[in-house]
Length: 325
Image (cartoon, rainbow, N blue to C red; front, side):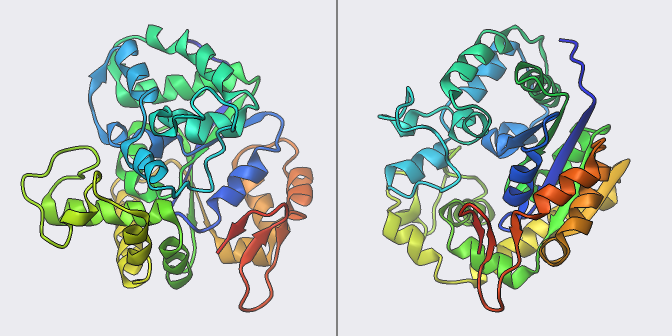
């Protein structure tokens, strides 16, 4: 597929540091497709160098995400999920295709129709590495939605930084950070990051992620947390120990900073959430210029009105109800 794409950008962050805020503001730019949670919805394949046929790649995209299905099963629906209540899979969310949970539902008011349009095209992709499939898919999505460029953002994408920097050598990268204590506290209260931390602990102690592979041996304290035994109460209880999330932040930060040292991207913009909240016009102006918005100053001025500086000791907020806490 040859697509008239003028630019490709990826926002990398540990999560819970304002990346959703940036995605929502970028979505207001008329020429730019803001793609949310795509790369994390395709883990673990996103880290793979596998070569797949188009039909195999579409099977990956159209399959449910086991860790997200577990959250649906125990009733801890992540608030980022935007799939409509009258959608095709609304009565069976554990079978919801991964790209419908957030990615397509944040782009279209009729995500099922967009899913069907992609289903007619993606299986025809040539046999190629997963990374090239990802680029073709995002380019196709951009064309189908009438945009000229795309910006992808996934919470926790620091985990994927080594892969993304290698797979997208020509893309521009935004590295967004937030101070570690606030990030860890926010993660500890969020079901998706409670799940990410649990999976990371399984990986570190058992050598595999049990939501995607069968472990040979499981320590007694982790056995009640296996996918078929996990409960909402057990996952929430793990959120009470913020030390787990301080460790997760340290791990994710090491992943991205080592990756940036190993594979220096050609285009990189570093941003701090604290600066964005304190100086929104200036910081969004920097971002708009980096994303090559022709009207970056006007976009930054309008977008900055949606960034609300919190009073001391309160949560950071975005007008319309979205929060970073």
